[in-house]
Length: 580
Image 1 (cartoon, rainbow, N blue to C red):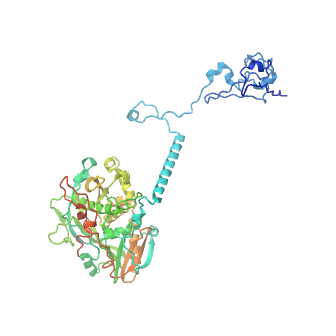
Image 2: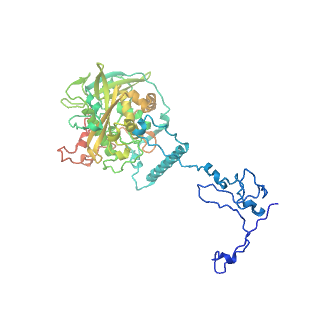
Image 3: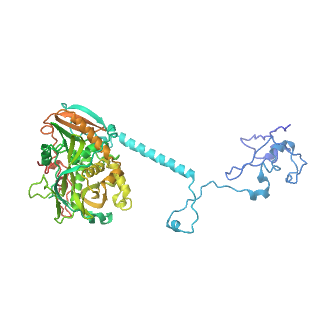
């Protein structure tokens, strides 16, 4: 039977709490405390032993095996055997000092990470790089998830804060005031557009008008280090004429050349409608068996959107230089001037069948060619659209049409990418950011290039000289793309684009004669069709552009002698040349 565990005598301290000062008086001469009780260290780097083991079989006190050292105390009492580990090397191997050399402390700390630098990378005799541990990868994934969750919380907090400028404030404003007497006929969600598909044969050119100047190839070599100042072309006229005001389209309609008439801007808006966020509207007129797609005077279709599909909210104040309206005016001004600066202005032009149908004799017009093209939508249904190209270039002794457009950077903190630092080394990242923030605008430019059968589309990167100066700009780079390849890159499906147009045309052809308006809902991804009076948008409903004194004025230039008020004068979309 195992010996009984006896607790030794505890000395009593009559003078206070704790052990007495002198233990000689209180401690008995014969102690009952067990012998050979090992001290259990508390250091993490040391191996801990056992305190007591009452389940093992104890050897006899006389036994002294040759393979075990004898007890230093000359033998222990049987009652102390559960606490005596001096003869048990398996249970407490450190009792044998000769075996200390066999003990090795294992360090659990990860090895130091190598410094990946030029010396490490190009050292031919370098040792093999240590493999990344799975624990480190998992830890980094957890940290990344925490960081994403933190950003999402901050973003949702900013959106829920009423004092912060909210993106919905700009989106919720409709492009046209819905009048109470308008009758809503139908509403189409964008989800139905994604399932549409329609193939059209190659178009035929009915007429080419205008004249084109050649593209200056030296602009392809521009980099942020040798940027060029953006010039102003105030004397050149830019025309934004709607469908029914076009004399050529009127002539083609009288000759029954087609059933549906539109412009490339209106068609591109319809084709890329699922990517749009801001509100827009298109006027539809059913006259006899013909259908005309128009835009209103002063419509938003004349301006270019900026950061339309971005998650960063823009300032709500309309007079702020970074508000949605101010940036649209600035982007249109930049786009017009860029399309004329990258040309070889030596007077040599490529002329076509007829001159510019909107220019008066003696006017200096911008370099543009109008291609009136016809597509077959059905057996007895044709569509005629006026398409624009801005320049021409000679490749292998053949003339190729070019469309010219410019992306503009207004403040790097909104996009998170500084063009001056990233355009040379990470141009793909800059383009990806623009595709995220301006998906609708880039898709419309691509659709217009495809409609006009342009062989090349040039995208310019134009930035402000200073983030707070929206009057002076510089060209940082010009990049060329083939429209069909670029459409594949941005996931723009041509069959789906024509499927959207075909569905809207079929819907409108079932309507009675009259005037209708197609409005993009400002807060939902859908469009609505309203029946409006015949005199709508002509008297009470027309939205005139702001007077010049109320428009956003650029800062006055006084140091370099540059003329004032260039922005509003350069953007000649509502007030210019919309002549019949």
